[in-house]
Image (cartoon, rainbow, N blue to C red; front, side):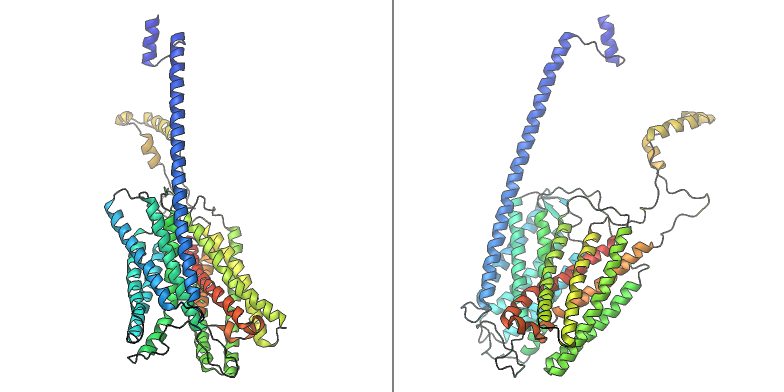
Length: 589
């Protein structure tokens, strides 16, 4: 009987009887298996703890490097501004040359190492470094290279009486831009798995170098644009508050110096944006070091202007009108005539009021459409999205600061005259527009991309039920079909069907945009072009904060210069970052 039962067990028909020896053996084996599982769990937990500690240590070390470099750089930049401190531009450029050389060497080492090691980069973050962001980096990099060429040609004229460091720095900066652009174009999506500590420290060094170059460029450009009123108040001549060590008492050896200097100052905004783009991409790479990325939810996005007309058309009209008023503003302010200055200031304020009002109305409409949108919110961590939101909110603080300081000054002085009333209106509307635009962009960045097939119905059926149904249908057929078998996997693929349609109807064509999608794209296109306009005007020299003297009179000139020159670079960056974010929202809508 026992042998028959054992044979039955082997054949798989019945379960074995619960005899005492087998029970003891199973208990013993179960205890061993449980202990082995507990041991493996403890081992994996300990490994995870060690890995977590190593990651925290490398994050801490790389953060310490960044903090020290930035604080030392801030001290040198601040010291090189004022005349009474014995630190000049040459000392600052020597510090920047050291950073540029170290960063360039590390980027070359990283590129060579990852190309030789097959397992150095196992994963790619497809959200990081999209092609339009890298394209913008290349565009700004080309403009920065042209700026460096103009600087070199300009400083060659002063080489006989000035330091050679002023030529060495733009040469090395041009090499740095070439290497970094190539590096970020190839490796912006990398999730490095080997040499994580060195990689994190190198990326933080890259971030620090770009922030220092940004800080130095912003300081130089701000000092160039700052108009210091003379003490007697009878002249409109501006004075330079830069530290000594330049070539004020040195004559240029060729006649093109003045033209070259004006030309490269107009290219400073592109160099400033290049440094910020590179800093953001380096930070995302730093966050992705050691990250295991699951990209099954990634969607490829394509740029199309199909059925989108009103937003781009109105935006281009605003951009053209704004550029026209900006040129008039720059030309008339340069003449120094007080009456013309007041007239062009009024035109400038009216243009900004119209632009900001239309942007506010468009943003309100976009937020209302989001309330009707059925798309899900994205889930999971994404360093790129988190950085975009953080930069958007952080950079808007600079514009908020200038607006609120202006509001307090105008209200406290009674808002007398049309200029002050328009200045107050622009500041109030800008505050409202910034708040609403931040909400609109952040909401758009956290929505799942819209796809044309998301409204197409698909039927997924249990393969085993389909198999049984197929067998029943086959048995009802005569001839050789009786021997046919249906695979469940084949059935699944064959039964993945599109929406039901009448027989003989043509295949579904690409449908037109829904009204919600079209409205969102129109709004994004209009806001994008308006933000480009609001970036161009301050980036290329519009300073109504100094041309309208109410801020300098109310807060005293020294404090007002600090408020404007600290807040305005962040406000300029906010507009360009809004352009990038709105383009992404346009793609996902």
